[in-house]
Length: 337
Image (cartoon, rainbow, N blue to C red; front, side, top):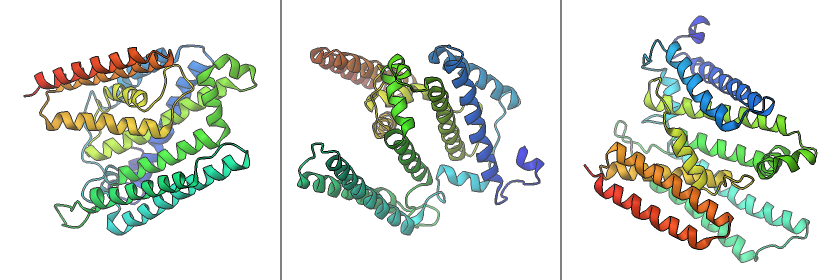
């Protein structure tokens, strides 16, 4: 309604940008509120997050006229969610692939130079060259097989890389840079590993925790915008139970519940695994309750393996993995429609 108050209706050039900016600002504000409660109020983060789920979803339901669905949406806004026209096209997809290859080679080279500068051990040069070549081959094949090889059923033209994938790449690169190359990222890892030691070391733990919640609010706003654009509808139950998939993706990607361990790329890889699992179960015609059971088994199995490996109990980790696989396979087999 804010763009309408400004005299901008649907399909105006800047309506989608104003709506997206407002959503991101609101996401940052919500993150700041919850972060302040955790950092300065001393309330456990789990309780604040759980309470926030109820509060914000209740407000959305009330503001959405008791669950009313808003559809259709602005056509320019829909491009954020992909679709027949929401992609880069063939030419720009190849440009993105070339940029990705250059970035992969540059990251390997810069990492090697950095370790040499500080007189740290470096891997053999052929190993780094091989890693860069493999990364470039994977990028080019992904663009060629997945993006370029699929033709739009409407226009018959190659669709190219979808806009949500581009947004994912940008977010991954930016957050990885913050986590690995900026002081803020080092502070987050230090607080996750040992908050008391980090505070004694001079880190402003309260400010860092609050900024982390603000960052999460912004990322949630971007994710909500992409999913809303993909559905071409704003619904009040959007994202319900996605938190379980997110937790599972983070743990599968190597994030430790003990804190201080984890990578952005690992979390993205875990999300790909979880979505592949969901899509595979849909293709196998597994009913929805069985899908939720399998996701729950995967979550518990991943956490148990992480706990066992932290205690150097490899045998326990292997047993947990075997039990999880057997249970998941049994549920999948019995849940086929």
